[in-house]
Amino acid sequence: MTASGVGCRATGDDGLPDAAWLVALASLPDVGPARLAALVSGRTAQSAFVRLVDGKLADDRVVAAAVRRADPGPVLERWRAAAGALDVAALWQRHVDAGIAVLAAGGAGWPDALVGDPDPPAVLFALGDPDAVAGPRVAIVGTRRCSRYGWDVAYRLGFDLAEAGVAVVSGLALGIDGAAHRGALDADGAPPVGVVGTGLDVVYPRANHGLWDDVAGRGVLLGEAPLGAVAERWRFPARNRIIAGLADVVVVVESPERGGAMHTVDEAIRRERPVLAVPGPVTSPTSVGTNQLLGDVAAPACGLDDVLVAVGLSPGATRSPAERRAEPTGAPATVLDAIGWTPATYDEIAARSGLGLGEIAAAVAALTAAGWVAEEGRWIERVIRCG
Image (cartoon, rainbow, N blue to C red; front, side, top):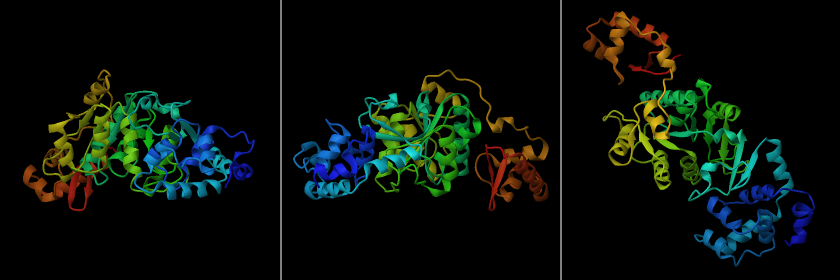
């Protein structure tokens, strides 16, 4: 299709901002961060779009290098066909109607933390208030398959940091990410920042739909994918680099030796961001990675003050929900001490406390009602979150 062929559909005198053409380029099939950056390298997004449709990018070395794993010819032809069929104005209006802000690299609203980033996104889509990233920020990351201990620690760190005025950043995944942001939301303090790997209308994982809405309503959701972009494996490592880029400090709560959290750590180290790790039980597979980090690159994060010092802030006293609970006395206090910080059975509690099973059952019921413990099958676990 020629430039005149595009004109009746997308390039007429319609007053579209350059951001609209950036959205259009990002919507082409298999256009990831590197390819989008190559398409707009040295030119406006509108110019890149028109040149693509006119077949004038075939000899561009930057674009050819970005599609080096495939034959640039077929890739460019596929993009050209998709671009020629795209109604850029309608696509732009979809984003406007959805309340999505489109931030071009280095332009208005662009986060200062990403200026000079070694691998910056070419565009960010934002739902909520982009100014939520203006203050100090700590990324809390970890495994989706976290233990109750990990969930509670992430929740408490999220709560305390938000209450101390530090924005919590995460990828809004299940497990540690979700716990940290739920804590931040319950604190009603600094606005939360979520960085996602899909279009802002494609909630992933679906179970976190309510959390997405809450984060967008109180802070901001950010991503580099346009509306409709679905979850694909390559999008999540790309998302992790943005999490690391936005964070002043990265805290790993629980992680095995490999996984998304460890990739975020690598990206943080690449950007010379401090990394902290929460020590975990040596018998727990979900703490193998974090404990290894403590011997390699990370300082320990044993509480709020450790993180605040790493951010460059003065330690201050904040009170989490756990600290607002009345301390148990009598048999409940004895049972709580017997449980410790690892899951225990009734028989183990009895052996440690010397109490009878009936007395333990009554104490566990009282502790559960007060928010001190939770029962998971035959296990009783100490928790941090109240209620």
